[in-house]
Length: 278
Length: 257
Image (cartoon, rainbow over the protein chains, first blue to last red):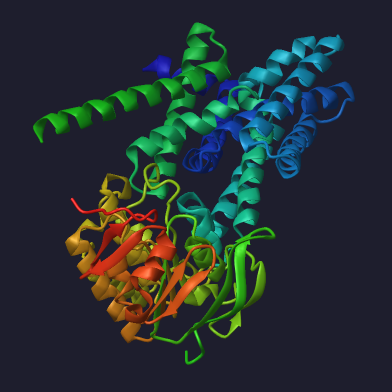
């Protein structure tokens, strides 16, 4: 039993990591549910990677990384709007172009500055075990904002997942709520990347909510399942990281993705058993 | 509720400045019904979307329930032809019907008892009460369509705009739909449906035959002549009972078998 609890009892950094992971899990469970239901995975992925040059520039200038990430995310969202408004290219082409362009820019910036090379890994994979109290505060604040916005917009958000035309026909400003949703995704990525890293935050948006989609009959329960999967993954991942010296962020996301595939297999097996009986 | 449901004058509808249907004149009273009949691309869905405020008017005048189009959304119910993600969304049938009540109360007011009564009555009318707790994604296409229709009913609106309402419905489903429509009209709601189905169209007070322009507009028995139907659909059709029967192709050879 000691092996499962002791690492968290005796190490301040493990406690902070666990707390940060729980906050990230809850935030990503709510936002990730909408990412999965509205098929916004690609823009989520792009946002997660597009923040890289922003962070790099901020670090070169000695400014807070989160500010740089926010600017990177804003360029990404604004750029997608700009390209789709001025050309007949589809959304995913616009997203793909900006995504890879910004990522390349980030890598160029990092490689040209000898100040940064050591930091690349921490940007991409996060610093789960080096979470500061200020990071925890930012993460808690992000969760609060996400909760308030989601409660306030619950009906239009649900309608948007169901049918964009119906949302507008009922008099809701669908485009406005779509942008609000993008902002939530961007905000979640910007705040969470310090903990799980910009490569892996996307995994926390997708995998737990994916499990939720497989198991839940309602959106609220989907968010609950996603939260549970996120928190369990955080705990197991951190534990594995502590005992086997695995990279913490990657262990957590790997656990979440593994849970997704276990549940998917279980659900498919159950369906085929029921199908055979019927 | 005494105001006219739809008033259109020299209305053109389309996308951007490109009109796909022009010259629409309409005057729909409370409790009245109009069927928009035409083939794919005739402009009937575009007209319906414009009435629902989803597309801006290209040209002409349009008033819905006594106000400029788009300003009465709370009193209008719209059934779209396609639904984005009925298969992924974790929703039960009853949740979908409840959505119809979303804009009928303020953002922070919870569902009332009156809402619940309306939702269950609507599901009863479409005979989907027993599906209430089933996930939407587990229902058949026809069952889903009935649930969407129940959502429309739950709005208790003054104007129903229905795009292909009977798509995928079996005979009992169609019967339930007709009952529901009569119920709506008896309480004074006006109905506009877009349909290929001539049987369904002939139950309306008025039929508008469309093919990029208004071919004919009037009571079903007057309007649905073989000549008009030929012009609307581009093939010779004649009405036998509720069915349309192909009588000849437009290049005039016999179609007897």
